[in-house]
Amino acid sequence: MSGDQSGGENDRPETGAFFARDRAWHPPAFAPGYKSSVLRSPQKALLSLDGTLSEITGPVFGHSMLGELDNDLIHNFAKPGESAIGERIIVHGRVLDERGRPVQDALVEFWQANAGGRYRHRKESYLAALDPNFGGCGRAITNGDGHYCFRTVKPGAYPWPNGVNDWRPAHIHFSIFGHGFAQRLITQMYFEGDPMIWKCPIVGAIPDRRAIEQLIAALDWGNTVPMDARAYKFDIVLRGRRSTFFENRPEGN
Ligand SMILES: [Fe+2]
Image 1 (cartoon, protein in one colour):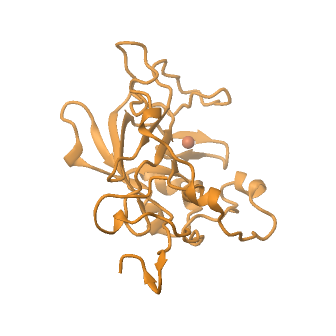
Image 2: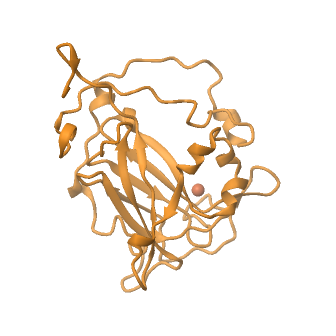
């Protein structure tokens, strides 16, 4: 496990259990406006179980498992010398825990539709064209500062069979593995200024507007690459750990 972080209190190894998930902040499993949630949501009350060693200490990933183009969706599926079609963007940010500490060596996976709003998937039925040079998925591992970065093309909005005329706003799906299965998070990132965000039934299932705003990546002008790509910044917060008590006080105090 890579719990040792550089600097200050982050030098302490992580040994405490994780905080409980804040279910008022996350969307409810049952959200009738998001039709497929009706049948797949639990029908009975949830049971709460203590985390065991396997949930709080694994999995572990290393930088050596990544391919050279894993964090470059513009090229990782393209023919040699070619690139994906679309608005070139950089997406980056930090993975932190609830105490604001960087989560090092987190595996960040991402997948998305192409610039026309179409996925490369055999069950995809939208009429937008496939891009022969775009696969739509990649991965990165956070550095010692919790930072990840990848480049891609901005995904298009797409319609989906929910209501009569529902569309998903442009979005990128994320899966993050932190330092334990209890930190696993699957979420979606949206783009600043997109009016489609506020028309989406899936976004609408999130009860608190401030929680929605945390899913919207800001245009990051300072990290734009001139004549190449604009940048968007998206920070991600995973569940944190409780303090580890040393004798009668929290460790480090
Ligand atoms: Fe999607």
